[in-house]
Image 1 (spheres, helix red, strand yellow):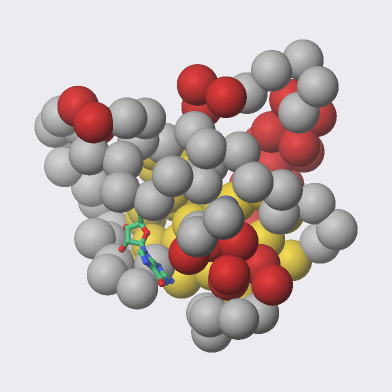
Image 2: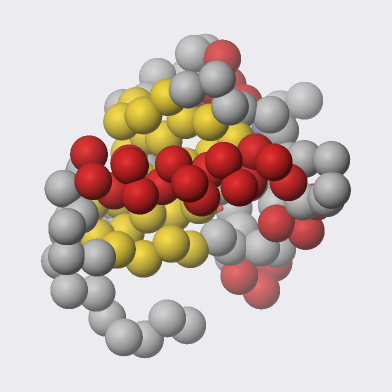
Length: 112
Ligand code: 5GP
Ligand code: ZN
């Protein structure tokens, strides 16, 4: 399967990793949209939030218990935003589940 984020997990495409464990990793977005912009992804390929199910949901809960640690490591002490784009209308461009972590400045209150 041709997946950029699977290639990043495998080390075939370089990335600036900020966190990694057995189940997930986080790396800086190549095209940052905030002073701090990283992506947190499961190591296993899940296409989007639409493909989360009873079998693979444990990695998602793991990610959500890990995000506060990643945010702390990135010094996002004043808050941050978590976004996951799903499908065409949300402009999801990489079909491997990922959570954008945005922060490092006051973000716009417009989310759409
Ligand atoms: P989406 O639009 O699917 O929600 O987000 C995909 C994100 O992946 C975009 O913010 C884009 O900048 C980022 N991205 C795409 N290709 C690469 C890459 O090769 N390396 C890194 N670090 N980020 C990437
Ligand atoms: Zn993948």
